[in-house]
Each structure stands twice: as C-alpha cells, then as structure tokens.
Length: 410
Ligand SMILES: Nc1ncnc2c1ncn2[C@@H]1O[C@H](COP(=O)(O)OP(=O)(O)O)[C@@H](O)[C@H]1O
Ligand SMILES: [Mg+2]
Image (cartoon, rainbow, N blue to C red; front, side, top):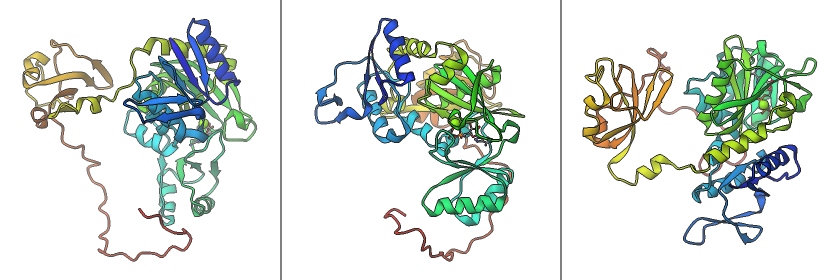
C-alpha cells in the first residue's frame, strides 16, 4: 500500500519507527507535514494539494495530529475521508478525544467506567458539584490539557472553589473529578490497535507527585494487563472511533476507570518499556483494513427516502421471543437486522435461524414506517428524581461585569 503519515515531526521517535516499520514491510510510505496541505473544494470532487501541488494517490493515512493544530489537522483528515482514503482514526474521533469533557460524555453512556466527573459553569453550583463527585480532595482539570499540565489536586472545597472561580474568570472551563486516591500516582496505558491491546505499561509518579505522566517525571514499566482492563481499553477506543489509541486507565478498587483516550499515542515510552514492536502492529493493522475506508452509514443510507437505521427492542412479552429471525417476519416487513445486541455481546449479521430472546436489541436497516412501532420507548431516567423547586417564571438575572462583551449567540 501507499501510506502517508501526517506529522509535523518527521524526526521524532514515533514517526521514524512507523516509517521504518512500513518500509520494512514493503509499503511505500511518506511523512507529510499536516500544515502544508491545502483543502481543495474548487473542483468537481474533494481534493488536496500538498506544498502547492496536486497530491498523488494514497491508499491510507496515519494521522499524528498534535493538540496545537487540532482544527486544521482534523480538517485535513476529514478531507481524506471524503476522498475515500482509509484512516484508522477518524476526524470525529480525533476531535472528540481532544476534549476531556466531550470524551467522558460520550463514554458515560456506554458500558465502561469513568471517574465520577461533573461540569458546571455558575459559581453557585460549584459547592454541590464538589460534593457530587465525593468531596475534597478533588481533581480539577482543564478540558484540553496534556502531559499532566492543567490537572490540579485541590485539598479542600474552599480552595477548589477559588481555583475554579479564578480559572473561569479568565474564560477557562474546567472539569471536576473524583480523586481516585487508591490509584494515586499510578495509571495504566494500554496501546490499542484495532480490537486488541498490543502493549501495556504502568506509569508510576515520582515522589509525592500524584500525576504519573512521564513528562512529570513518572517512570514506566511493562504490565501484564488484566483481561477486564484490556476489554475496557478496546471498548473505549471503539466507542471513540479510534483504531489506534493510547487508553489511560486508573486502577480503582472497583476495576478500570477510563481517564482519557489519546488519538496520537507516542511509541517511545511503550516500546521502550515493553520491548514490543508497536509500530509494526499499527502498520499491519492499516494494511489489513485499507480496503475499508470510513463511510457514514446513516448519511449514505438516508439518501433512500423512507428508509433508515433503527434499534428494535425485543420486549420480554413480545411475540418474537422464541421465534427465529425468519419466523419473526421482519424481513417480510422490509426490515433487515444488521446486528444483534444481547447483554454485553454483539452478534454481527445474525443468521435467519437465530432464535430471539427477550431483551435482545436488533440494529436494523429498513422501512421507517414499519419500524416505528418496534422502537423502544425512550429510556426513563431514575424512577424518582427529586422535583426541582418551582422557579418563578422570570428570575432575577445577575449582572456580570467580569465576563466582557457577550458573544452574539449568548
Ligand atoms: N481522577 C483522578 N484521580 C487520581 N489521579 C488522577 C485523576 N485524574 C488524573 N490523575 C493523574 O493525573 C495524570 C494526568 O491526568 P490526565 O487526565 O491523563 O491528563 P493529561 O491529559 O494531562 O495527561 C494521570 O495520569 C493520573 O496519574
Ligand atoms: Mg494523561
């Protein structure tokens, strides 16, 4: 295959290793500076220029987009996606992974655990927020920090409140998170490629530092990953839409907690700690998947009006329970099951002879009208949430002099 590594650091350890691994396997590989692309929407088809010239054909890209160029970098990746060039990490995945709040929001609805986290804006809500995540000491995080910079351990609630107020006064949003004290100064990095963990290490902080980042002096050692950690890491990467990812987890008393999912994980630390050929695994995965460029199924399918994708729930009292997919008559109703979710397992392309059980969820493509009655009712939130106090219709709006001019959409 012909592979482009998108990177601004051609001489870095990671880029070099990936380039050599691709070359050794007989692939054509080039390192292209992400910032030298021009996104070209002037012709009939989406196109890219590189250093002022028409870009030649590539089969795949491997984006290594640094945090400082996320906007432009993901725009370039998105353009490759429009041109049907394979990328292991999608532009959406990279974007989502860059913001700690956004990634935790996405992960939180799935079956992976995260440290209790909360996000508030008004200072009147800060005290409650701290209690919600377990009280002080509490972790305060910048949404887009890296290398441990922007992660603060506030010893008590008053200090936490004043740190948050200070940061918000300069327009910086922060996330509040439970301090997982049993994992103080340690975390686990699992390097995920496709649907497996190819290498893992534990990082241990220096001295009384609570952050285990190598940039904060932490040291790394290879670790034999417990299967629950491996499964959690792979799920987190998949949920984020990343096929090459560095998944950081805390080791809590209740198992793995996902801290973050990195879309351009470095290779030096993990290859040095484990002695494994991580670069080779990345290249082999791309080579294996290159025929399957990303496509937005919903977008493509929605072109056929009246048809779409929906998830059908087989209720316990449904007539479908005990019937095969054929007997259910779904196909006769113009509904095609694409995958079957049963508990925590997924059965892709379920066979017509597959017997349905109560609680099964079938992801289907089909006639929207036919599917309407089969879609589960919207999930109810907790049975009894304390009712909010009655608010007067017009509340007093506090004048804020500290926020500068409001932007037009505020
Ligand atoms: N909720 C937490 N509880 C305990 N330690 C934490 C928590 N959040 C972060 N840490 C420590 O701080 C380090 C940096 O946090 P992280 O969220 O990964 O930010 P960064 O993107 O800067 O690496 C982690 O590797 C971990 O050692
Ligand atoms: Mg980290």
